[in-house]
Amino acid sequence: MDETKKVLDKINSYSSSQIDIRNYCRRKMEERNIEEELLISTLFSNSLYYIEEQEKTFNKIPEKRHKLVFKISSKYSLIIIVAFYPKDLKIINVIKTSKGAEKQWRKKFL
Image 1 (cartoon, rainbow, N blue to C red):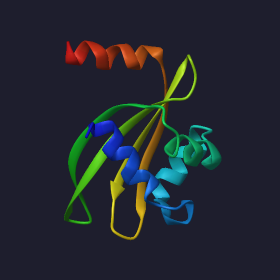
Image 2 (cartoon, rainbow, N blue to C red; image 1 turned 180 degrees about the vertical axis):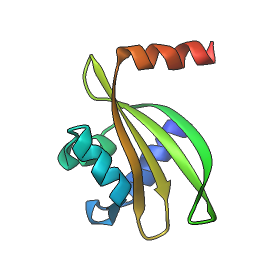
Image 3 (cartoon, rainbow, N blue to C red; image 1 turned 135 degrees about the vertical axis):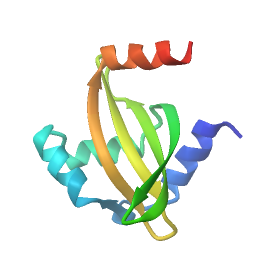
């Protein structure tokens, strides 16, 4: 099974009530003028085009995170950093980017 499909299936296994947006992320969303509705609708869309796994430490406990990049328009993408837990999907950070950032990632992998 394709990695993108696996991640989308995993996301879709959660209901919107199981989405837990961390306080840090809420503050950043407010600073960046990103609405929660945009975050939720994008997360459950099929516009995912890039995935990167990350290992970070949160409260001294190793946490496996996924950087997910979704296309939200011809000009913008939404980067959503998530951690999958049995009972909920933690949203760690959300960033809205332009095409310039997308070009940098493509160069990184060529």
